[in-house]
Length: 179
Ligand code: THU
Image (cartoon, rainbow, N blue to C red; front, side, top):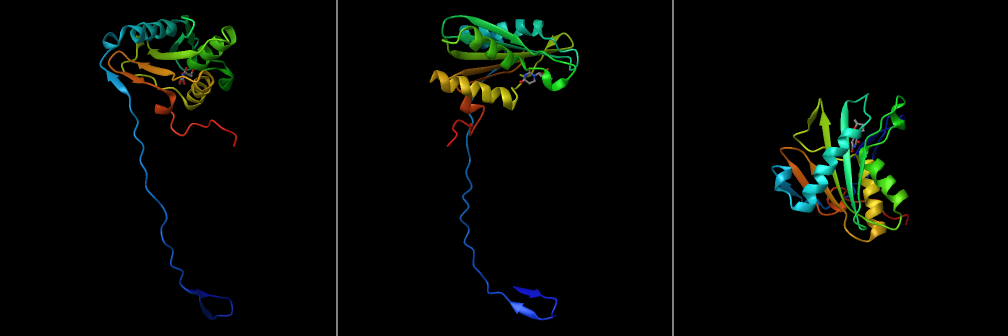
């Protein structure tokens, strides 16, 4: 390569041959898809219906987007939560975290084995599933790690339902260690 200096001289810098060490990698994400909640296996269908019910308690005057979450716990309980908004927007909380934090605070010795999420807008349950935000996925990851068992995620819309067997499938490269 030739470079021009302020002494108007050319210096030649020897060529360095750089061998590429980059490897292009791909990851696969697997999930099950159903055309409606009615097609789900019974336990998942019940949880999805509970998530739909939970949309009814959403406090979302700012977005008009009513999200419901329902959790199945290892003690057999089903817990519902919904998004709770605030005029100071960041003070609000998503449905998923509302439900998970309530469950963990109320039943600290029980694991969350599954979470279902649904949303409604303008009085109708959304046709396509609402996909959880990154912060909620990270919180799911924490409870899955604590439980040492997979946490199933059911994203329920009236015309599409997605089922992920574990949090890794919806949050690749989870931050799970301080090393
Ligand atoms: N919201 C949830 O409750 N869960 C999510 O995973 C994504 C978004 C809420 C937050 C806010 O109240 C509204 O949906 C619009 O973003």
